[in-house]
Image (cartoon, rainbow, N blue to C red; front, side, top):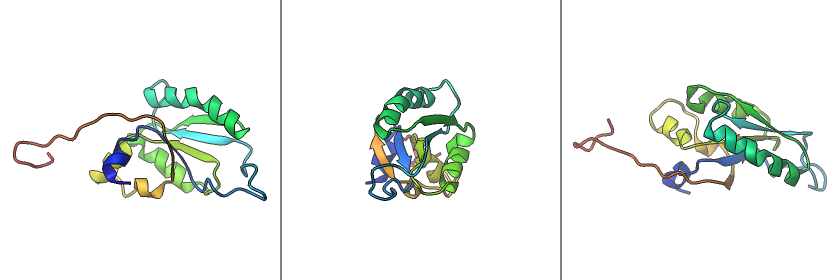
Length: 136
């Protein structure tokens, strides 16, 4: 998957180690799933997460709790997700900022550190340059 395509993903539910299931693989190894949103309550990413959480919960058969970790252009939220065990119990809703943060040097964290599970929405965006062909 190229960087442009990844950049167009407004929300990818990302689980670390989602394929790792105990025993016969019939259930997740957790009592609930935490869905991390790197933005504050009431915004588009939060509203989207809260609208799909009940369906995800029903599909998984366990509660899904939405947790907001706002600030820092979602970098603190991503740090929190990557610090957790790769046990399939954490989902992370990302936006195009994930690619932008890495591209402009705000973080060394990368979309490559995550496992995309679902593309739920595509947001059309553009990259602008000045007349000299520089990214200013």
